[in-house]
Amino acid sequence: MIDKKSILVKNKIKEDLRIINQKELESFFEGFNNNKRNYSFIQYYNKIVLDKEKIKFSEFSYQWALHLPKDFYTGFDKNYNARINEIKLEKDIKSFHNKFCIDNNGKRHGSFCSKLFHIFLPDEFPPVDNPIRKHFGLQKEDFITAVLIIKEGYELFIKENNESLDLIRDVLSKDKFSYLRADEVSDIRILDMYYWLGESRLGK
Image (cartoon, rainbow, N blue to C red; front, side):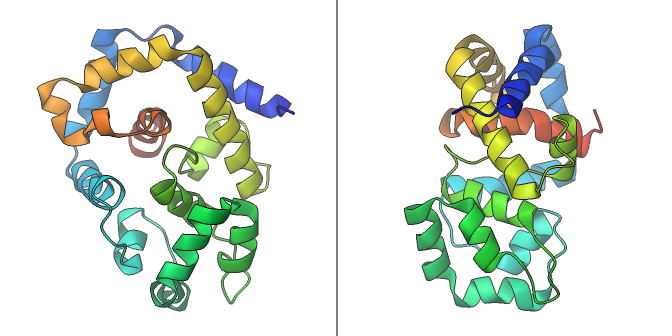
């Protein structure tokens, strides 16, 4: 059964993209080009997602601007294969979060968990930050619940709005955006880039 809040997410995406034209999108995505931090992150993202290089979690924490205790992320380094295999095989973010994404002080690292799931299941899970969560009015939801609502909302939008995604992909196919490697990334990542740049980096 589709969550009503997922439908609201879908409708919000439609509203956000309804009046966007190609020229506006091109100008918007030039925000990546003009920011060294963004560019560095894109290179890192492509390395671990598209080129499938092994993650070093100290670097992962830095690149995603996470604040993780050292003993927390070294646990992922030491148990890398087992935990990544569980992500790929089980695809159960709630269970994984409850087992592995609560640190020794009881702090929950839902954003870290969503990003890790996105890295290994980029067609299925969006990486979520608090600004994205707030944009969709889900800041009062448990973080992982919000991730699942946004995931379903993205999937509903993708299923019904190929033209909007094609427009974004067309813009990102231009040579000046070639470093984004948009032809290789998932539809969820295309939406994520739009919201990540707008919410997390430019304060849209």
